[in-house]
Image (cartoon, rainbow, N blue to C red; front, side, top):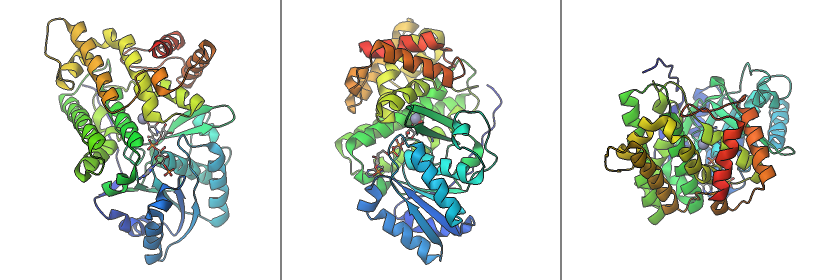
Length: 394
Ligand code: NZQ
Ligand code: ZN
Protein backbone atom coordinates (compact mmCIF):
# COMPACT_ATOMS: atom_id res chain seq x y z
CA UNK A 1 0.00 0.00 0.00
CA UNK A 2 1.23 3.47 -0.95
CA UNK A 3 0.50 6.86 0.54
CA UNK A 4 -2.01 8.92 -1.39
CA UNK A 5 -3.84 12.24 -1.63
CA UNK A 6 -7.54 12.06 -2.31
CA UNK A 7 -9.19 15.31 -3.37
CA UNK A 8 -12.79 15.22 -4.61
CA UNK A 9 -14.28 18.64 -3.87
CA UNK A 10 -17.27 18.48 -6.23
CA UNK A 11 -20.70 18.78 -4.59
CA UNK A 12 -23.02 16.12 -6.03
CA UNK A 13 -26.75 16.69 -6.36
CA UNK A 14 -28.17 13.35 -7.45
CA UNK A 15 -31.67 12.20 -8.43
CA UNK A 16 -34.81 12.88 -10.44
CA UNK A 17 -35.55 16.52 -11.22
CA UNK A 18 -32.32 17.82 -9.71
CA UNK A 19 -31.59 19.99 -12.78
CA UNK A 20 -34.05 22.48 -11.27
CA UNK A 21 -31.34 23.10 -8.65
CA UNK A 22 -28.79 24.38 -11.16
CA UNK A 23 -29.56 28.07 -10.65
CA UNK A 24 -29.43 27.79 -6.85
CA UNK A 25 -26.12 25.98 -7.00
CA UNK A 26 -24.56 28.54 -9.34
CA UNK A 27 -25.67 31.27 -6.95
CA UNK A 28 -24.31 29.46 -3.91
CA UNK A 29 -20.91 29.22 -5.60
CA UNK A 30 -20.89 32.94 -6.38
CA UNK A 31 -21.77 32.94 -10.10
CA UNK A 32 -23.36 36.16 -11.34
CA UNK A 33 -22.81 35.99 -15.09
CA UNK A 34 -22.94 32.52 -16.56
CA UNK A 35 -21.80 30.96 -19.82
CA UNK A 36 -24.12 28.04 -20.54
CA UNK A 37 -22.13 25.61 -22.66
CA UNK A 38 -23.69 22.66 -24.48
CA UNK A 39 -23.33 20.21 -27.35
CA UNK A 40 -24.88 19.55 -30.73
CA UNK A 41 -28.54 19.69 -29.84
CA UNK A 42 -29.65 16.84 -27.54
CA UNK A 43 -30.26 19.26 -24.65
CA UNK A 44 -32.30 21.55 -26.88
CA UNK A 45 -34.45 18.67 -28.17
CA UNK A 46 -35.05 17.24 -24.69
CA UNK A 47 -36.07 20.62 -23.26
CA UNK A 48 -33.29 20.43 -20.65
CA UNK A 49 -31.64 23.65 -21.82
CA UNK A 50 -34.91 25.54 -21.31
CA UNK A 51 -35.31 24.14 -17.80
CA UNK A 52 -31.74 25.10 -16.90
CA UNK A 53 -32.29 28.65 -18.18
CA UNK A 54 -35.50 28.87 -16.14
CA UNK A 55 -33.61 27.86 -13.00
CA UNK A 56 -31.00 30.59 -13.59
CA UNK A 57 -33.71 33.19 -14.26
CA UNK A 58 -35.50 32.22 -11.05
CA UNK A 59 -32.32 33.16 -9.18
CA UNK A 60 -31.93 36.40 -11.14
CA UNK A 61 -28.68 35.21 -12.77
CA UNK A 62 -27.94 36.47 -16.27
CA UNK A 63 -26.32 34.26 -18.87
CA UNK A 64 -24.95 33.91 -22.38
CA UNK A 65 -24.94 30.67 -24.37
CA UNK A 66 -22.52 28.75 -26.52
CA UNK A 67 -23.63 25.44 -28.06
CA UNK A 68 -22.01 23.32 -30.74
CA UNK A 69 -19.54 21.18 -28.78
CA UNK A 70 -18.91 17.93 -30.68
CA UNK A 71 -17.61 14.61 -29.29
CA UNK A 72 -13.79 14.83 -29.08
CA UNK A 73 -14.19 18.59 -28.51
CA UNK A 74 -12.29 21.04 -30.68
CA UNK A 75 -10.01 23.90 -29.72
CA UNK A 76 -11.65 26.25 -32.28
CA UNK A 77 -14.89 26.40 -30.29
CA UNK A 78 -12.88 26.86 -27.09
CA UNK A 79 -11.29 30.00 -28.59
CA UNK A 80 -14.78 31.30 -29.43
CA UNK A 81 -15.89 30.58 -25.88
CA UNK A 82 -12.91 32.40 -24.38
CA UNK A 83 -13.60 35.49 -26.52
CA UNK A 84 -17.27 35.41 -25.56
CA UNK A 85 -16.56 34.94 -21.85
CA UNK A 86 -14.08 37.82 -21.80
CA UNK A 87 -16.37 40.13 -23.78
CA UNK A 88 -19.37 39.40 -21.56
CA UNK A 89 -17.61 39.37 -18.21
CA UNK A 90 -18.54 35.77 -17.50
CA UNK A 91 -17.60 34.58 -13.99
CA UNK A 92 -19.06 31.03 -14.03
CA UNK A 93 -19.40 28.31 -16.68
CA UNK A 94 -22.32 25.89 -16.60
CA UNK A 95 -21.65 22.81 -18.72
CA UNK A 96 -24.89 21.07 -19.76
CA UNK A 97 -23.94 17.79 -21.41
CA UNK A 98 -21.34 15.05 -21.30
CA UNK A 99 -17.57 14.76 -21.10
CA UNK A 100 -17.01 16.69 -24.31
CA UNK A 101 -19.03 19.69 -23.13
CA UNK A 102 -17.46 19.62 -19.66
CA UNK A 103 -13.95 19.37 -21.09
CA UNK A 104 -14.61 22.24 -23.47
CA UNK A 105 -15.96 24.26 -20.52
CA UNK A 106 -12.80 23.53 -18.51
CA UNK A 107 -10.63 24.72 -21.41
CA UNK A 108 -12.67 27.92 -21.75
CA UNK A 109 -12.28 28.34 -18.00
CA UNK A 110 -8.48 28.12 -18.28
CA UNK A 111 -8.32 30.33 -21.35
CA UNK A 112 -10.42 33.05 -19.78
CA UNK A 113 -8.56 33.10 -16.47
CA UNK A 114 -5.02 33.02 -17.94
CA UNK A 115 -3.17 35.05 -20.56
CA UNK A 116 -1.73 33.45 -23.70
CA UNK A 117 -2.74 30.41 -25.76
CA UNK A 118 -4.79 27.84 -23.84
CA UNK A 119 -3.31 25.04 -25.98
CA UNK A 120 0.00 25.54 -24.15
CA UNK A 121 -1.52 23.77 -21.14
CA UNK A 122 -2.48 20.77 -23.29
CA UNK A 123 1.07 20.67 -24.69
CA UNK A 124 2.38 20.86 -21.13
CA UNK A 125 4.65 23.80 -21.87
CA UNK A 126 3.23 25.76 -18.90
CA UNK A 127 0.75 25.37 -16.04
CA UNK A 128 -2.57 27.18 -15.60
CA UNK A 129 -2.65 29.46 -12.57
CA UNK A 130 -6.45 29.72 -12.45
CA UNK A 131 -9.70 28.47 -13.97
CA UNK A 132 -13.17 30.00 -13.96
CA UNK A 133 -15.48 28.01 -11.68
CA UNK A 134 -17.38 25.25 -13.48
CA UNK A 135 -20.76 23.69 -12.70
CA UNK A 136 -22.20 20.64 -14.49
CA UNK A 137 -25.61 19.32 -15.44
CA UNK A 138 -24.63 15.83 -16.62
CA UNK A 139 -26.49 14.11 -19.48
CA UNK A 140 -24.37 10.97 -20.07
CA UNK A 141 -22.62 8.62 -17.70
CA UNK A 142 -19.20 8.06 -19.21
CA UNK A 143 -16.11 10.27 -19.00
CA UNK A 144 -16.34 11.16 -15.31
CA UNK A 145 -15.25 14.72 -16.12
CA UNK A 146 -17.96 15.98 -13.74
CA UNK A 147 -15.63 15.16 -10.82
CA UNK A 148 -12.25 14.71 -12.50
CA UNK A 149 -9.26 17.04 -12.71
CA UNK A 150 -8.72 16.41 -16.39
CA UNK A 151 -9.93 17.64 -19.74
CA UNK A 152 -9.13 16.43 -23.22
CA UNK A 153 -9.08 18.66 -26.31
CA UNK A 154 -8.44 18.13 -30.01
CA UNK A 155 -6.58 20.56 -32.24
CA UNK A 156 -8.37 19.83 -35.46
CA UNK A 157 -5.76 20.77 -38.08
CA UNK A 158 -3.17 18.33 -36.68
CA UNK A 159 -5.55 15.72 -35.23
CA UNK A 160 -3.71 16.16 -31.92
CA UNK A 161 -5.85 15.04 -28.99
CA UNK A 162 -4.26 16.00 -25.70
CA UNK A 163 -5.23 15.95 -22.04
CA UNK A 164 -4.39 18.35 -19.25
CA UNK A 165 -4.79 17.65 -15.54
CA UNK A 166 -5.08 20.28 -12.85
CA UNK A 167 -7.15 20.19 -9.66
CA UNK A 168 -8.29 23.79 -10.17
CA UNK A 169 -10.67 22.69 -12.95
CA UNK A 170 -12.61 20.22 -10.83
CA UNK A 171 -16.26 21.26 -11.06
CA UNK A 172 -17.76 23.03 -8.05
CA UNK A 173 -20.95 21.03 -8.38
CA UNK A 174 -22.44 18.30 -10.54
CA UNK A 175 -26.17 17.88 -10.94
CA UNK A 176 -26.87 14.26 -11.85
CA UNK A 177 -30.36 13.25 -12.81
CA UNK A 178 -30.27 9.70 -14.22
CA UNK A 179 -33.54 10.40 -16.06
CA UNK A 180 -31.64 12.77 -18.33
CA UNK A 181 -29.73 9.77 -19.70
CA UNK A 182 -32.88 7.93 -20.83
CA UNK A 183 -32.68 9.64 -24.25
CA UNK A 184 -29.18 8.34 -25.00
CA UNK A 185 -28.67 6.25 -28.14
CA UNK A 186 -27.85 2.63 -27.17
CA UNK A 187 -24.39 2.97 -28.69
CA UNK A 188 -23.54 5.95 -26.46
CA UNK A 189 -24.83 4.10 -23.39
CA UNK A 190 -22.52 1.18 -24.17
CA UNK A 191 -19.56 3.49 -24.93
CA UNK A 192 -20.18 5.20 -21.59
CA UNK A 193 -20.23 1.93 -19.64
CA UNK A 194 -17.00 0.90 -21.34
CA UNK A 195 -15.27 4.16 -20.42
CA UNK A 196 -16.46 3.87 -16.81
CA UNK A 197 -15.06 0.34 -16.55
CA UNK A 198 -11.80 1.47 -18.10
CA UNK A 199 -11.28 4.30 -15.63
CA UNK A 200 -11.22 1.76 -12.82
CA UNK A 201 -9.29 -0.86 -14.80
CA UNK A 202 -6.58 1.71 -15.57
CA UNK A 203 -6.09 2.09 -11.82
CA UNK A 204 -6.47 -1.62 -11.03
CA UNK A 205 -3.83 -3.08 -13.37
CA UNK A 206 -0.73 -1.67 -11.75
CA UNK A 207 2.55 -3.05 -10.58
CA UNK A 208 2.58 -0.86 -7.51
CA UNK A 209 1.09 -1.94 -4.24
CA UNK A 210 -2.50 -2.66 -3.51
CA UNK A 211 -4.92 -1.68 -0.81
CA UNK A 212 -7.64 -4.21 -0.11
CA UNK A 213 -10.42 -1.66 0.49
CA UNK A 214 -9.61 0.04 -2.82
CA UNK A 215 -9.46 -3.26 -4.69
CA UNK A 216 -12.81 -4.36 -3.34
CA UNK A 217 -14.41 -1.01 -4.18
CA UNK A 218 -12.97 -1.33 -7.67
CA UNK A 219 -14.16 -4.91 -8.10
CA UNK A 220 -17.64 -4.00 -6.86
CA UNK A 221 -17.77 -1.05 -9.22
CA UNK A 222 -16.69 -3.09 -12.24
CA UNK A 223 -19.16 -5.90 -11.49
CA UNK A 224 -21.99 -3.41 -10.97
CA UNK A 225 -21.29 -1.57 -14.21
CA UNK A 226 -21.16 -4.80 -16.23
CA UNK A 227 -24.39 -6.06 -14.71
CA UNK A 228 -26.22 -2.79 -15.36
CA UNK A 229 -24.76 -2.32 -18.84
CA UNK A 230 -26.47 -5.58 -19.80
CA UNK A 231 -29.72 -4.48 -18.15
CA UNK A 232 -29.58 -1.24 -20.18
CA UNK A 233 -28.83 -3.16 -23.38
CA UNK A 234 -32.15 -4.98 -22.95
CA UNK A 235 -34.12 -2.26 -21.15
CA UNK A 236 -32.71 1.22 -21.89
CA UNK A 237 -35.50 2.93 -19.94
CA UNK A 238 -34.56 1.23 -16.66
CA UNK A 239 -34.12 4.14 -14.21
CA UNK A 240 -32.43 2.10 -11.50
CA UNK A 241 -29.77 0.82 -13.89
CA UNK A 242 -29.26 4.35 -15.25
CA UNK A 243 -28.71 5.59 -11.68
CA UNK A 244 -26.24 2.80 -10.81
CA UNK A 245 -24.19 3.53 -13.91
CA UNK A 246 -24.29 7.29 -13.45
CA UNK A 247 -22.92 7.21 -9.92
CA UNK A 248 -20.35 4.60 -10.93
CA UNK A 249 -19.17 6.97 -13.68
CA UNK A 250 -18.28 9.65 -11.17
CA UNK A 251 -16.72 7.30 -8.62
CA UNK A 252 -14.67 5.59 -11.29
CA UNK A 253 -12.79 8.72 -12.27
CA UNK A 254 -12.66 10.90 -9.16
CA UNK A 255 -9.63 9.05 -7.79
CA UNK A 256 -11.43 6.76 -5.35
CA UNK A 257 -10.62 3.50 -7.12
CA UNK A 258 -6.90 4.23 -7.22
CA UNK A 259 -6.19 5.18 -3.61
CA UNK A 260 -3.14 3.31 -2.34
CA UNK A 261 -2.43 1.50 -5.61
CA UNK A 262 0.67 3.50 -6.32
CA UNK A 263 0.19 4.87 -9.79
CA UNK A 264 -2.22 4.61 -12.64
CA UNK A 265 -1.54 2.74 -15.84
CA UNK A 266 -3.72 4.68 -18.32
CA UNK A 267 -1.89 3.32 -21.36
CA UNK A 268 -5.11 2.14 -23.00
CA UNK A 269 -6.34 5.72 -22.68
CA UNK A 270 -3.15 7.08 -24.20
CA UNK A 271 -3.45 4.64 -27.11
CA UNK A 272 -7.13 5.50 -27.56
CA UNK A 273 -6.64 9.26 -27.62
CA UNK A 274 -4.50 8.84 -30.74
CA UNK A 275 -7.21 6.69 -32.33
CA UNK A 276 -10.03 9.19 -31.70
CA UNK A 277 -7.67 12.07 -32.56
CA UNK A 278 -7.05 10.53 -35.99
CA UNK A 279 -10.39 8.86 -36.72
CA UNK A 280 -12.89 10.83 -34.58
CA UNK A 281 -14.45 7.65 -33.16
CA UNK A 282 -16.32 7.55 -29.83
CA UNK A 283 -13.82 7.34 -26.95
CA UNK A 284 -15.48 4.33 -25.25
CA UNK A 285 -15.57 2.31 -28.47
CA UNK A 286 -11.92 3.12 -29.16
CA UNK A 287 -10.98 1.87 -25.70
CA UNK A 288 -12.83 -1.43 -26.18
CA UNK A 289 -11.17 -1.92 -29.58
CA UNK A 290 -7.64 -1.73 -28.18
CA UNK A 291 -7.96 -3.00 -24.59
CA UNK A 292 -7.75 -6.75 -25.36
CA UNK A 293 -4.57 -6.25 -27.40
CA UNK A 294 -3.02 -4.15 -24.65
CA UNK A 295 -4.02 -6.72 -22.01
CA UNK A 296 -2.50 -9.65 -23.93
CA UNK A 297 0.66 -7.64 -24.48
CA UNK A 298 1.20 -6.78 -20.80
CA UNK A 299 -0.53 -9.42 -18.66
CA UNK A 300 2.52 -11.57 -17.96
CA UNK A 301 4.27 -8.58 -16.37
CA UNK A 302 1.31 -7.94 -14.09
CA UNK A 303 0.12 -11.49 -13.53
CA UNK A 304 -1.19 -11.29 -9.94
CA UNK A 305 -3.51 -8.42 -10.85
CA UNK A 306 -4.78 -10.10 -14.04
CA UNK A 307 -5.30 -13.33 -12.11
CA UNK A 308 -7.24 -11.55 -9.37
CA UNK A 309 -9.33 -9.68 -11.96
CA UNK A 310 -10.18 -12.92 -13.74
CA UNK A 311 -11.31 -14.61 -10.53
CA UNK A 312 -12.95 -11.78 -8.60
CA UNK A 313 -14.50 -9.75 -11.42
CA UNK A 314 -15.00 -12.11 -14.35
CA UNK A 315 -15.83 -15.23 -12.29
CA UNK A 316 -13.11 -17.47 -13.78
CA UNK A 317 -12.54 -20.52 -11.50
CA UNK A 318 -9.29 -20.45 -9.51
CA UNK A 319 -6.61 -22.71 -10.89
CA UNK A 320 -2.89 -23.33 -10.40
CA UNK A 321 -2.14 -22.20 -13.94
CA UNK A 322 -2.06 -18.45 -13.34
CA UNK A 323 -1.44 -17.47 -16.95
CA UNK A 324 -4.32 -19.56 -18.24
CA UNK A 325 -6.68 -18.01 -15.68
CA UNK A 326 -5.48 -14.49 -16.51
CA UNK A 327 -6.03 -15.11 -20.23
CA UNK A 328 -9.53 -16.45 -19.56
CA UNK A 329 -10.26 -13.21 -17.67
CA UNK A 330 -9.16 -11.16 -20.68
CA UNK A 331 -11.28 -13.30 -23.00
CA UNK A 332 -14.27 -12.92 -20.68
CA UNK A 333 -13.89 -9.13 -20.68
CA UNK A 334 -13.80 -9.10 -24.47
CA UNK A 335 -16.87 -11.31 -24.44
CA UNK A 336 -18.58 -8.72 -22.28
CA UNK A 337 -17.67 -5.93 -24.72
CA UNK A 338 -19.12 -7.93 -27.59
CA UNK A 339 -22.27 -8.62 -25.55
CA UNK A 340 -22.96 -4.86 -25.39
CA UNK A 341 -22.02 -4.43 -29.07
CA UNK A 342 -18.65 -2.82 -28.45
CA UNK A 343 -15.74 -3.56 -30.84
CA UNK A 344 -12.71 -5.62 -29.84
CA UNK A 345 -10.52 -4.81 -32.85
CA UNK A 346 -9.92 -1.95 -35.29
CA UNK A 347 -11.96 -3.73 -37.96
CA UNK A 348 -14.94 -3.94 -35.61
CA UNK A 349 -14.42 -0.26 -34.74
CA UNK A 350 -14.74 0.47 -38.47
CA UNK A 351 -11.24 1.77 -39.12
CA UNK A 352 -8.44 0.37 -41.26
CA UNK A 353 -5.20 2.15 -40.37
CA UNK A 354 -2.25 1.61 -42.71
CA UNK A 355 1.13 0.58 -41.28
CA UNK A 356 2.26 4.22 -41.63
CA UNK A 357 -0.77 5.40 -39.66
CA UNK A 358 -0.12 2.83 -36.92
CA UNK A 359 3.44 4.13 -36.72
CA UNK A 360 2.23 7.73 -36.60
CA UNK A 361 -0.17 6.94 -33.74
CA UNK A 362 2.52 5.08 -31.79
CA UNK A 363 4.93 7.96 -32.29
CA UNK A 364 2.42 10.59 -31.16
CA UNK A 365 1.35 8.44 -28.21
CA UNK A 366 4.91 8.04 -26.95
CA UNK A 367 5.60 11.78 -27.37
CA UNK A 368 2.41 12.66 -25.46
CA UNK A 369 3.51 10.29 -22.69
CA UNK A 370 7.02 11.73 -22.54
CA UNK A 371 8.63 8.56 -23.92
CA UNK A 372 6.95 5.74 -22.02
CA UNK A 373 3.65 5.02 -20.33
CA UNK A 374 2.18 2.40 -18.05
CA UNK A 375 2.39 0.79 -14.64
CA UNK A 376 1.22 -2.76 -15.48
CA UNK A 377 4.15 -2.68 -17.93
CA UNK A 378 5.93 0.42 -19.18
CA UNK A 379 5.33 0.71 -22.91
CA UNK A 380 7.71 2.52 -25.26
CA UNK A 381 6.98 3.55 -28.83
CA UNK A 382 7.82 0.11 -30.25
CA UNK A 383 5.54 -1.55 -27.68
CA UNK A 384 2.73 0.85 -28.52
CA UNK A 385 3.15 -0.01 -32.18
CA UNK A 386 3.05 -3.71 -31.35
CA UNK A 387 -0.28 -3.25 -29.49
CA UNK A 388 -1.73 -1.23 -32.38
CA UNK A 389 -0.66 -3.95 -34.81
CA UNK A 390 -2.38 -6.59 -32.67
CA UNK A 391 -5.61 -4.52 -32.66
CA UNK A 392 -5.30 -4.09 -36.43
CA UNK A 393 -4.93 -7.86 -36.93
CA UNK A 394 -8.07 -8.47 -34.83
O1 NZQ B 1 -23.79 16.89 -28.41
P1 NZQ B 1 -25.10 16.31 -28.04
O2 NZQ B 1 -26.17 16.64 -29.01
O3 NZQ B 1 -25.49 16.57 -26.62
O4 NZQ B 1 -24.93 14.69 -28.22
C1 NZQ B 1 -24.06 13.92 -27.42
C2 NZQ B 1 -22.89 13.32 -28.21
O5 NZQ B 1 -23.24 13.13 -29.56
C3 NZQ B 1 -24.80 12.68 -26.98
N1 NZQ B 1 -25.55 12.85 -25.76
C4 NZQ B 1 -25.08 13.22 -24.54
N2 NZQ B 1 -26.06 13.19 -23.63
C5 NZQ B 1 -27.19 12.81 -24.30
C6 NZQ B 1 -26.86 12.60 -25.66
N3 NZQ B 1 -27.80 12.21 -26.57
C7 NZQ B 1 -29.04 12.01 -26.15
N4 NZQ B 1 -29.40 12.17 -24.85
C8 NZQ B 1 -28.53 12.56 -23.90
N5 NZQ B 1 -28.91 12.66 -22.62
O6 NZQ B 1 -23.80 11.71 -26.73
C9 NZQ B 1 -22.69 11.95 -27.59
C10 NZQ B 1 -21.41 11.79 -26.79
O7 NZQ B 1 -21.26 12.85 -25.86
P2 NZQ B 1 -19.84 13.14 -25.22
O8 NZQ B 1 -19.96 14.29 -24.31
O9 NZQ B 1 -18.82 13.21 -26.30
O10 NZQ B 1 -19.58 11.79 -24.38
P3 NZQ B 1 -18.58 11.44 -23.25
O11 NZQ B 1 -19.12 11.85 -21.94
O12 NZQ B 1 -18.24 10.03 -23.48
O13 NZQ B 1 -17.28 12.35 -23.50
C11 NZQ B 1 -16.26 11.94 -24.38
C12 NZQ B 1 -15.08 12.89 -24.32
O14 NZQ B 1 -14.55 12.92 -22.97
C13 NZQ B 1 -13.13 12.65 -23.04
C14 NZQ B 1 -13.03 11.73 -24.22
O15 NZQ B 1 -11.72 11.60 -24.68
C15 NZQ B 1 -13.96 12.40 -25.21
O16 NZQ B 1 -13.31 13.49 -25.83
N6 NZQ B 1 -12.68 12.15 -21.74
C16 NZQ B 1 -12.62 13.04 -20.73
C17 NZQ B 1 -12.17 12.68 -19.47
C18 NZQ B 1 -12.07 13.65 -18.38
N7 NZQ B 1 -12.24 14.93 -18.65
O17 NZQ B 1 -11.83 13.32 -17.22
C19 NZQ B 1 -11.71 11.32 -19.18
C20 NZQ B 1 -12.06 10.31 -20.22
O18 NZQ B 1 -11.16 9.26 -20.15
C21 NZQ B 1 -12.11 10.84 -21.62
O19 NZQ B 1 -10.84 10.83 -22.22
ZN1 ZN C 1 -11.96 7.51 -20.55
